Image 1 (cartoon, rainbow, N blue to C red):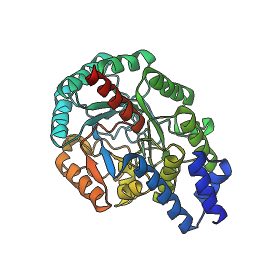
Image 2: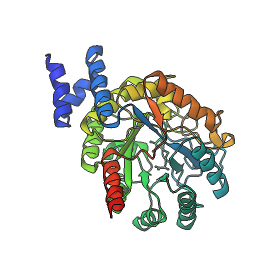
Image 3: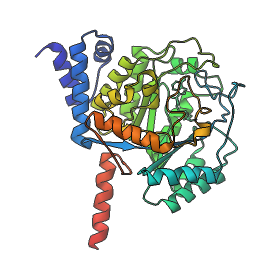
Image 4: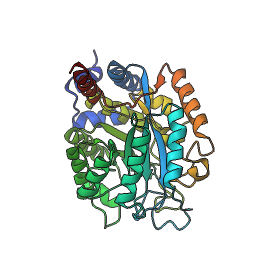
Length: 363
Ligand code: SAH
């Protein structure tokens, strides 16, 4: 076996990667090695999750944001963004459509919008959980206090997505204004885990200033946090942001990183993101074949889809939820996978829940 293949085996066996190995994998031009990397990652995912793909119904409920991240199209300084908020009724209507289509996870994502007070968020979560008790609710609404996170959890929220964006202090400063802090973001993630959320961190691939070293920090952070989910997708410039002229992250680099994350953190729930589908027409299929096991079709009302623009050229903005679901199911089928009607918990939690249920039944 060549030294390179031995390196892949060692990453897989030890579930860890050194700075040198990361550099070698990210920089190699050896397409055979990269094929082997993807194959190993895909095998790792199918050993745990079979050919099942979990779907999450994404509801983008507000594009108001008090933050001003340099990369993001809904940053507060973007006066050209056409702002909107969904009412509780509109959100519930998205859930209804989604439930009928087989979604058992709803992801409520938005900018950091103070209009949605903790009381409002808790009401929305409670209503969804009471109408759809068999569903998981994921929140992705940014940095909040421990009390707020606890209140949402008590209201029934199951999961929380908060990409750390970069684990490197200097790089973080290039992407965010002075008021924001990496320390706070990392601390939020630790608090979320402590409260008991299934927690997701993540980062954009190819964001301005990203290097092998900053990516290595990201991987170390993942190993330390042990999140249930990791969201990564290519950075894509938005025309009305300070990064308008920066190059997008590449498909190739994103796929390599998806595979590496699968190998070093095997049980993770790893989406092939919309951004990946935006930079390549078969991006999401390729993401699954590189080790992903989750996709997140859009359930937002069609009239707001185009307004939730974090980056340019976002796909699927004109499709109804049913079309998105059918399209996704067909895409996954075309590569030998099956979209399932399931909450899609992380494997270890799934086993624990089943054991608890069985114990309950025997009593
Ligand atoms: N306000 C929430 C949700 C942010 S939007 C929060 O703070 O977590 C979700 C993710 O989209 C962000 O975490 C970021 O990683 C990604 N994103 C933002 N702008 C992007 C861009 N221009 N290209 C690709 N991804 C982007």
